[in-house]
Image (cartoon, rainbow, N blue to C red):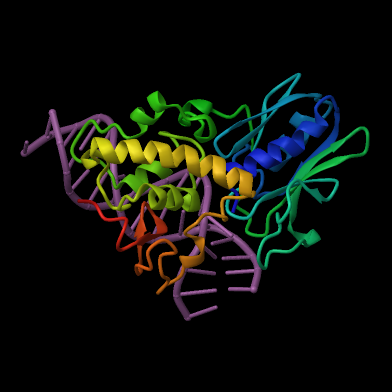
Length: 263
DNA sequence: AGAAAGCCTCGGCCGC
DNA sequence: TGCGGCCGAGGCTTTC
């Protein structure tokens, strides 16, 4: 679930600890997998004061008076402050809270705790993350930046769905947001990026912004118009067309056989 | 039982 | 034909 909209809600939650000083931190071996050792997290964060928050795509940043601390949430990670979720419906579907899924976090001198809850163990913490690997942020993508996202230098390029998921091109688009914006733009997700027409690029940019704004207002990446049809045999809510299903860019992709049809 | 919303690695092969 | 880099497949991990 955590795509850019969810991570932005985690950032707003983390804003509440700006000014607080870390008494101690802890991380299990999975959460600390990108660090030299699990103890490196505890050692590094001790006595740091949080000075601000940031975010690039799905990467949450905590600025401090020392190194920048970063969190990525994988597929099932959730950020909690003292056990309270930052947004409604954070524990979606069957994933409820269980103390055994607490993987690490920060405890502040004032007693509050910022905790990562992650059943599937793909969340990670980082110290001084390399932001050069990430493209511009999807929530504030400009037309100029979008033009770079769909630019292809050699050949026809990858399927547009795969390109949208490429975090080095644009940071923050996950599988559900990617499908939703292509659905709204009426574009076949298999279309090679370099073969998109000017009209299709125009529609995709508008749908990109519209998808971010609308789903942020609704409260989550899983609240798109096409979600109800996201199962084998589903019918398009817009025109009743059969929804097609394939793996594109490594992710399960759904699209409408009627209106998402490249001409 | 198979699929899952993210990320990382690796092998193949595309295109110059 | 050689080669760097791109692209897609597969794995991770646990759950329902």
